[in-house]
Length: 107
Image 1 (cartoon, rainbow, N blue to C red):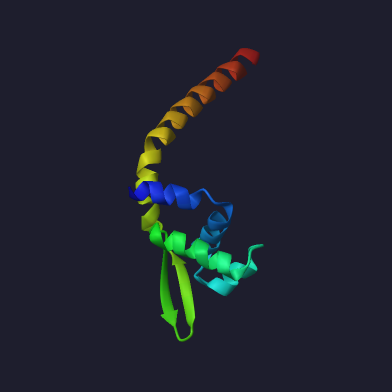
Image 2 (image 1 turned 90 degrees about the vertical axis):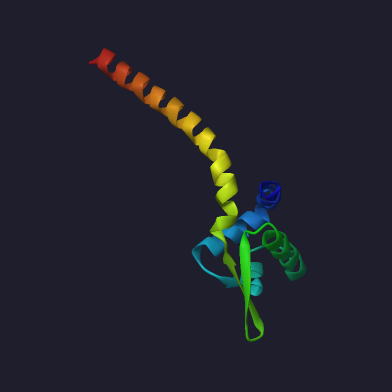
């Protein structure tokens, strides 16, 4: 299942950091390695996991590989989370109502 691979990829903090960087701009493996406290071979392994999960794309520019975020890779997880967002929105709306009632009672 694609979502399982995405969730496993997201489970690692280094991979989440890499995705955060790639959310803002494309980067080389070296640039990503500079942002993390791990050796370049580890960065390469993390990038392979992210590629296989469909979360990043890679393109060749001369001798460099440029990695970029594939936001479509998160679509299935986003769809799955929608029901939970609705649940929390309902609870936050109820909390807002209770707070408003409390303010009226003090006035």
